[in-house]
Structures are given as structure tokens and as C-alpha cells.
Image (tube, rainbow, N blue to C red; front, side, top):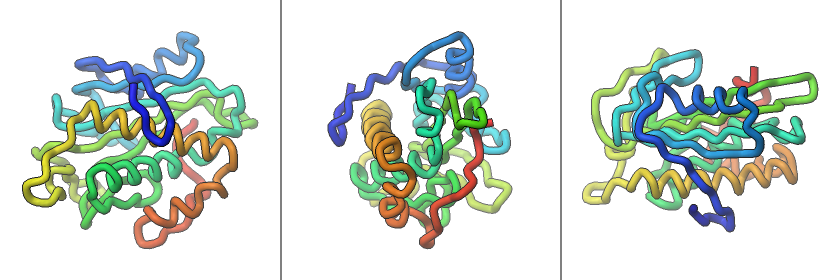
Amino acid sequence: MAAFAGHLVLIETIDQIDSTNEEAKRRLEAGVEGAHWLRASMQTAGRGTHGRAWDSPDGAGLYLTRYARHVDPLSANGLTPTVGIALAETIRGSIGVPVCVKPINDLVCDGLKLGGILVEGTRTPEGMTTSVIGIGLNIGSGPRRVRADGWPAASLQDVLPAGQPIPEVAELARLVASQVEGRLADLHRGGPAALHSAWSRVALDGAPWPQNEPGGR
């Protein structure tokens, strides 16, 4: 477990899976209750928004998913930017890399894409009844795809100051998960308005809070 901003998080870790998001959805479909975290050392079928493949080699990145069944469906509104805030805050605070969130779900630095967020789930007229929040972050260098929108994929290693060590994946996962839990608590208590100030500090080029986020279908 990890403590960050007062939140304790238990993360289940597995060596290899097709996709942490797909495994999370299978568990929710099987009736799992509550909120849980799952991390894999390697994914064989990782993916991002619009079904794009996400390279997930062994030990070269953070492949992390939070999955939950919601008692209050409205509490899931605004998940993607909220998680983006938490991810950027963690990287800035623990590593010192000035990452930003490119709406709606890309983590970028110096014109390079380092990671992304994929929110999925079950939506009803009242809101999301289940949510699956996938977080992918490239850590080690290696061959990466160039995205269709022209942003080259890179890793934390590519943007770290010379001589600075690469974060240990398990520790980074604990920091990210704990910060996400803290920001989700803020969202639940105050709604998106409670996070607008934090969003303005991490959004690329001062982008406004996203009004229509993908996922949740």
C-alpha cells in the first residue's frame, strides 16, 4: 500500500495480461464490487483511445487500471480530466518533469506524448454505473509509434534531466494511484468545479475544462 495526500491504495500486480482495462471489465461483468487497482508488467494487447495499439513491453512502462462499481453514478462525471490532473501532478511533484495534459487524455512534454488515459465503463441516463480508468505511461526508451495526430511517442527517460534516475515502476504506480484517489475524492465532494483551478495549472496551452469526455459507453 502507499500513502500520498493521506490516501492508502492497494495495487494488485500481475506479470502479463492482454490488457488491464479488459481484465477489469471482465471482473466487473463477473460482479466485483467496490473500487480496485490492477497493474501489469506487460500487456500483449494494450490499447488507447479509438482502439489504437499501445506498446506495452515488459518493464518499460506503467500499465495501470482502476475499476469500480459506482453507488452514485453522477460521481463519475469528469473522470478523464480529473485523472489527468492527478497524473500530471504526480510526475511534476515526484520527478520534476513539466508534463501537461493535452485534452482530453494525453500526457505530453516538449511536443512528445509520454502517456495517456482511457476511461471506459457502463453508462445509464443517470450516469456511469461502472468505470474502468486505464493509465499508460512510457518510462523506458525504445521504439514507439508516431500517432495519427502527429505527436511522436516518447518516454520519461527521453525527457528526464541528464543523470536523473528513472523512477521504479512499482513506486510510481503507488504514487499515481494515491494521487488519483485524492483527486477523485475532490471530484466526488465538489464536482468538476472543484478541480478547475488544478486543471488550469496542468492543461496544455491553458485549454478549458473538457465538456464532453470520451469513454463510458
